[in-house]
Structure formats: C-alpha cells, structure tokens
Image 1 (cartoon, rainbow, N blue to C red):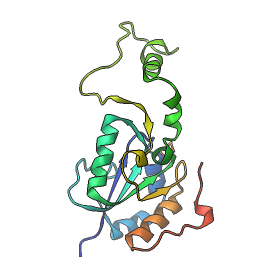
Image 2: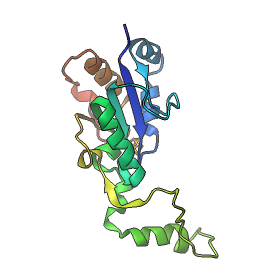
Image 3: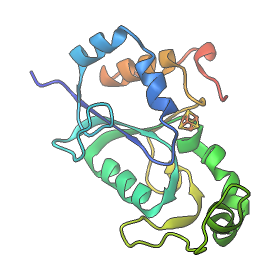
Length: 181
Ligand code: SF4
C-alpha cells in the first residue's frame, strides 16, 4: 500500500523548525517507514508529484513567492500545519511590520552602518520576488488546520502531532509539549 505523503516548506523562516524536525533523531527511520516525503527541502523535490496527506509550513509570508508557495501547499495538502511562531504569527521577521518597507530597504541597501553600495541601487531584478508591505502569518493567507507553537516547536511535539494526524487520531498534546519560545 502506498504510504501517505508529507510535504514541507520554509517560507519566511530560518530553517530552525526543519532542524527541530530532524531532531527526532533515530525516529526519522520510523518516519520514513510511515510516510514518503514529497516537495520539501529535506529531499530537495521542488514540485509536488502527488497529493499529500500533510503539509508542514515553517515561516510566514514576507514576499510574493512565499504567498504562491503557501497557496500551492493548500491546493496539494489535505491537512496544512503551521509549525513555529513565524508561520503562526509572523515571528521575529514581523518586527518589521511597524516600519514602512521603503525604510527597511533603505536601511538594508543604502544607509545601514555596514552597507557598501556606491550606486545606492536597491535590488530590482524582475527575478526577485517583491517584498510584501508586512509579514503575514500563514492563516491570513490560506486556511490552516493546525498550529504547533514554539520557536522552534520541540522535536517531540512535531513527532507526536505527525504520528497522531497520520493515524487519523485527534491531536491531544500534553502540556509539556506546548511552548511558545
Ligand atoms: S519559528 Fe523560530 S525556529 Fe521556526 S522558522 Fe521561525 S525563527 Fe526559525
């Protein structure tokens, strides 16, 4: 019988949530007996090859490409799980939300104390995704089915949640597996 498929993405994240997933250590061997990974930085598959039972989303949406990837995940995944504070509420990247985008770009490319940019050009190649006016949590862009908090969520939290959902069981995480830092 075909195994259910899991896809993962890092949007405006730091890959720390993916590192936490790998922190399940030797249970990764059990995980690959339970599921096949589809589109994910874990296996470097760039496009969906099949419908997925679960999609794990790290990071919020900071640019237009993040939005397209998140919408693509919603289309291809039965359950979409926001993992980590960035996906759930924007996280630390959302600290820019109170600052106009032009000011952020000027600080990054023109006026910052470590910037060397004689032309004062702000990158504008059409290949670059446009930055959004603010960082949006995943649930403001698409419907999200579950949120697993933490920065990152502990490996045990990710493991317990994945195993329960893949087995069609309700998600009852014990108090000690819920953290927000
Ligand atoms: S929640 Fe924390 S660990 Fe996860 S992507 Fe955001 S900053 Fe990184």
